[in-house]
Image (cartoon, rainbow, N blue to C red):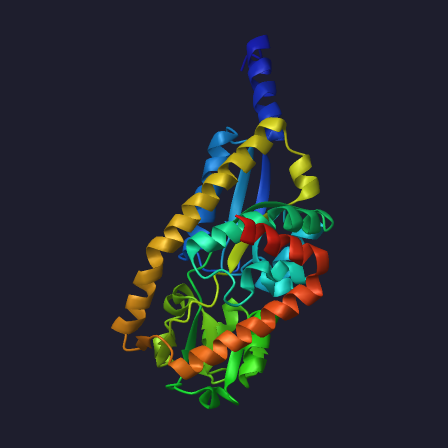
Length: 322
């Protein structure tokens, strides 16, 4: 084979392209079929197209690369370049991470978006100190209460084994007289099936994902709050991108935030309907239970503000001013 100047130039161009192409791992805690994961896959595909293949983001769903509670630290340390996490699960590190999970503060999609925008400056600052850059967040549908029995009075909740996924949900359980146990999403089905827990507060999405009707009987649509899954990138990895690639990532992140929120809103009523279709008793809580939950919400808002100081106050003030 004759080697020509043209062939050498073509080969060098290919090699140069290969050298600049970069692959990022993106661990996620939820199944590939979950709308958060599907939304992230659209984001990843769009980034690849926008960068002309210079940046490829590989999704690792269902805790397959890192479990949910490992993802944030993995991205901080650069063991993965980008990831998604329910930040409220890290409220023990900094209570600001629980801004989206203060009970009965933001109870609709519109309110959740307002709270997200109000929190963004403070949250970005906190994350920057941990070598993380905030990209986007997408809400879950409003949180409801699941039980393996009817609960018509506050007394009926006492002593019930409750699945907690962060400090906030554990505190809800404690104030209601229930017994919290931290269970990650990947372990929830087994915990329900084996009776490790028999109650939880979560969205209709999680209920459908985990076919909870196989182990639970009642869903109370209390609309406690809309927790948000947050996508963030290792700051050093992000800063190492070209200006074009950075713009692609941030532009597509903004689109993913809007697209994911719209999808969550579309799915919310459908999830609750699916729970009912599979035999669960679905409805609003009794007046007595509602009163107890309101009392819990007031207590927890006061507690959150006491732990977050000026940063928490800045978020609440900005939220109420919008």
